[in-house]
Image 1: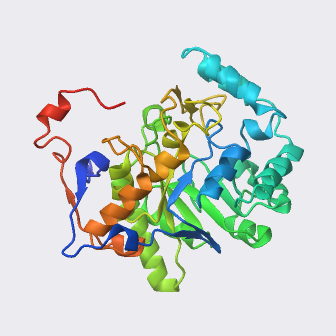
Image 2: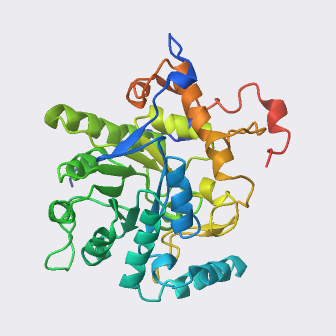
Length: 382
């Protein structure tokens, strides 16, 4: 008999288990530069709205664009299946908790309509905003050219887990290098959580990488499949691949930490861990501008055989302006996210997000409870 081989588990950390160490110098928050770029497209702040039916429709994308941000619209969602998607969204909102997943499944069985893809893209462009679109690898070859020909600026290939090497029954699956060469716009790919997978994806020529498997409030991939890496560790690992790739090639591929952030502190930790931007879904679902009026559900909730998402109700309790810029009277960090980023960078002595990546982080499982017994005894502010 051969001797058994024992695997050693390495620790991995989420937002509640780490803290950012203040720097030895400080900078006024207004002097910080928090601009974020994908290819030739620059945005005023490093916060992207996720491609959720409950969050991003053309109107929302335009409103976020007017404020200097970027929203991603889902080419496989309700916006591109229904002439008037508000009725479908209202049906999902009206369903009971027990019935909601089945309703989402039924409504996403309708065909994706190519003419609606072009129309949604043009609506966003005519509103003056940059247009980012998203679909799964299975539909990318079919839908990418339609969206780009209509004027899409950024194309996102997104699935629960994406790798540069994929084995399938298809004689010729999606080849990222060919997609990037053919569609002529920056291609962002996700999601991933590991160093090796991140490095191999960057080598295909992608313009951005999304990090995170299952951390979002509406995602159940971790429960259904048992997969995932806590977001701080996942971001650190993928950022290490980005930095090495940059040293080797001179080409910088931004990292977008996708999901799991509840407040400004989480957003700051994601950026300090190496993220160039963050992607939020539920936070934006709370705004008056979001189409589902306080509800949110996962992109994989409608999967026919194995749904990996759930509908939740965070409620409507803010606006885009208050969420991003304040002013606010809330003390829990759920509004003025841009202000939180600038202030945290300032106390760490970082003028740019690249400098913020150099901030020291520590393992600190008591960071939210130390000395907070009276806070923990009262109900949260919302």
